[in-house]
Image (cartoon, rainbow, N blue to C red; front, top):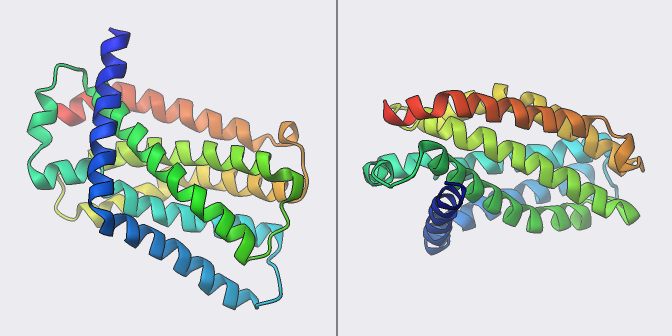
Length: 226
């Protein structure tokens, strides 16, 4: 059962990633938004000045959050728009395997964005990272996983709604506020030189993952079937 679950989830994620990279204009729009936000911020703070750790952390997560909204509009919503959701339902796997595949797809895409967004933010905004880079990467990876869990689940909830794109944004903001606030504070502390074990907000991110996983496990079967 575990092997079949993993195989189905990885197959769905692989299919979505291949589709995403074939539709390159969607990736280009995501990166254009990210780079545009960084450049605007650079001119807002001044060419020679660097933002404070608080501002840099908030800016990084705001860009990543709104980028994630662009990512999750292509998760379950694309299946509903193209009429391929029925094919997903007929797969010999559980609804949770389908959701897990979408989560893996969201995590992979957000990590791909972070590979470009984080270096660009550090370089263009002159943020002194130094030896704190591994800690910064850990916080960003854990925060991206939280966003992927919440975003994939909410994308499944609203996929049949009329204004699903707008509804996704409205629902994602309140649901992700605990994870976003924790990620911003953790990033600020990393930039201020805190050791990773001195950042309790990481435990809050893990708690958020546990809560959202419990909610998904209890409700997603009904969401997909109805």
